[in-house]
Length: 182
Image 1 (cartoon, helix red, strand yellow):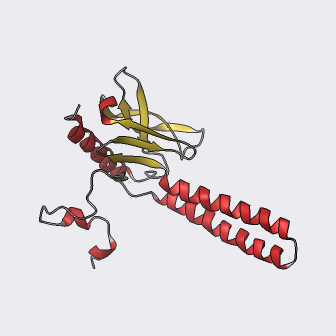
Image 2: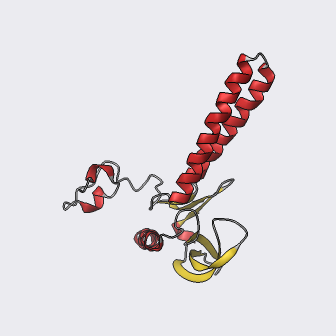
């Protein structure tokens, strides 16, 4: 039983070419859904934060206000890390290509992207130091430097090769569309 109101793909299933209200190319958007590893890790972090918040309330009720403040601060850090983890990934807009990492964000205008291509190379498994052979979507700068953007073994695409291919194709389509402005 299809439930189109529950999917984010219903815009692609539409037969008409009417621009939807959220189809604004000036806003930053992730051209793929966050993967189950990323969502699951964030959900576990939020679950941990709820227990830490409960501990903060118990500590405050016991009368140790400074300890409750420290515990509440720790819960706030866990919540902020979980929300940031959900934002990690590649984002596109008319202005360029944005790579959001856990502690940094870098934005590259489309004029500074000479090309995008999928290459076979050793990639990091779930962002850990261990490397495995896999695919990476790299963008090429005008000086020839190749920088990885997505890999098929990160938290969004592990065991989801089709999703990686769709995301790579979508980002390449954005590059092709806005490369004309160069």
